[in-house]
Image (tube, rainbow, N blue to C red; front, side):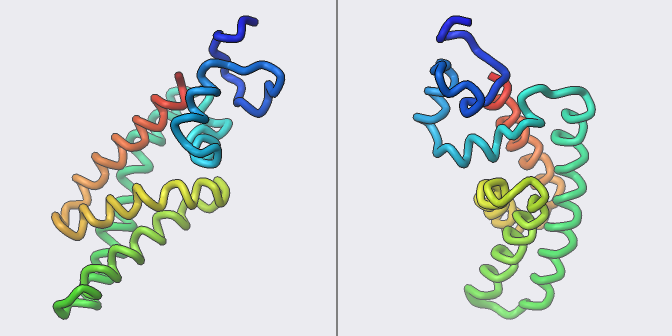
Length: 148
């Protein structure tokens, strides 16, 4: 195999060969982000994985976390002030991260920022469908990076 060939193996599985995509991924992002985004299930993607990541997970997670939990917390902190906006966002982003615990701590840490962005979007728009669409785009970008 040539050094510039792409491989479906992660960078760690072939330590003696420096693949072009491994080198570029490590320069772009920290190693834990790459591992979290590109776990073993994303190196080869089938139709069921695409359905789950691009449709089911965004709809179900945003319905539960934003329209359910975050909306409930917003109702509990209905007074004005920074805490009325900050607390629902932080609780929602944290819950979103914890939902990904089965994939490991690296994934929990990696998805916190997108979860925070989605929570701020919901706080501003109160539209979980917009959050689900954005979530699907985030997942699509992750798939695109991992499948290169």
